Image (cartoon, rainbow, N blue to C red; front, side):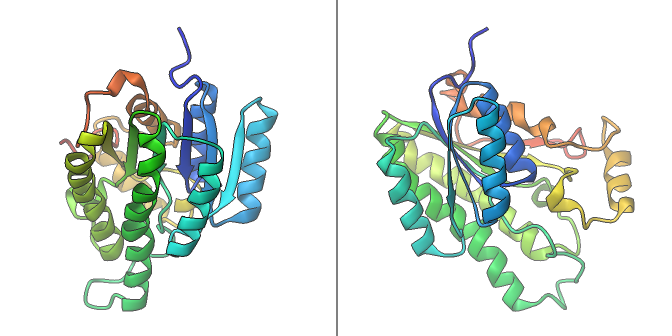
Length: 251
């Protein structure tokens, strides 16, 4: 079977570690030419080197999604290498944003989460549109979260930001369809990776027991759906939100 993404140039944000790195590795294995970005410079360089050792074509750029100027400069660099076929909006703040009730939540933290998770997703997509159009269209996959589907408590800013990503996905799909750009979202459950190392084991156990498939979720549980949404197999799929959580939430 041919590689799903052979020759396609794909940008994966937040790819230095965790789910983003897993997606980048899976895309590379399917023949993608990669551009990866993150704010974590050292880890990003390590990921890029590991991918190159596997034979992947990789460009790595430090981009701060909270900073519109950083996004603009990063996309200008990416444009120097040509058009894009796909964008995976994975970069987000997840670590250290939970625990407080809505009555006690810190407003500065709220603003930071919204700047990265919501505004950053919008600005990255907006900046990528001309590069996707240059190839006659393309695919955008936004990373939401199943917390926005069931209303996880004590996680207000993160849940609100991922709910916004779901709503933006649908609006983007309407607006960008005429440009031959498909936009979809995946909504993973609690995934065991570096970004969730702070989560207590009892929280993992709560998720595991609530799933139809009773095990912990790993990053590679999410990769296949994202690859499908980036591939030519899904060119008539847009505006959809796909939960990937072992049946913790049905949609």
